Length: 282
Image 1: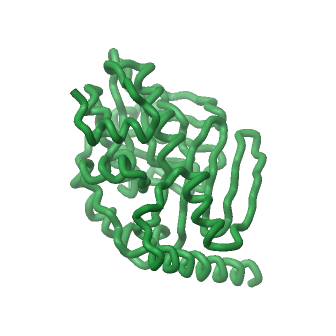
Image 2: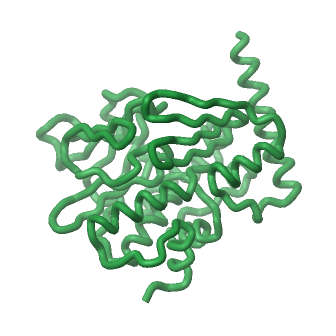
């Protein structure tokens, strides 16, 4: 039996019968999750960052919220485990350069093993692969181009792996092969969700993968990106446009946001936008 909260979670991603663990089932769950649940930092912007306990994240996602990697991959791992999948959490790190060997711990990623094959699974990148990738070295075209290689070279697969993400602001994500636990991410979550120099405090962000495209909202700038490099960009001119995009483009329920919350979020977005415009003139 699937408990009510997991039934609600599955309903949020449009899955009524997940079936028994299988490669096809894993791919379907991953695609559905990425298409319907956004990467976002609304509550962090409002000064009430949610915790990363998987049970809390499962409930929040079922109720229509999103989150960042600790929430999204934490909840998805709990769902997969509840459905009978063999899931491992890994300590990862986003890298600004593709040749970095650093694993900073600012990212949580997953692997899932089925029928002797391990798959890289990540619903917490925003612009990552739209479905699992076999955990073996290679280049993978999934609309956009991705790569996997052993961290440190071909003889170091037991140490960790690098996901290459062509065209992303973070072209590489390194992660260790060793299993991790949610407690390993607590300190970094505190920093990312409360420190003034955290990018999640400085900018309002939303991302969502759909079939063959990425939608990204950075402050007031909404961009639709296709695999061929085409971009449809527009500036949101009012709070009404912002909240409509949050709801319709990114699928986030807004019932938790009071009028005061909406005013506060728009003030933060507008202030950051003005600072960005000023920086462009320097």
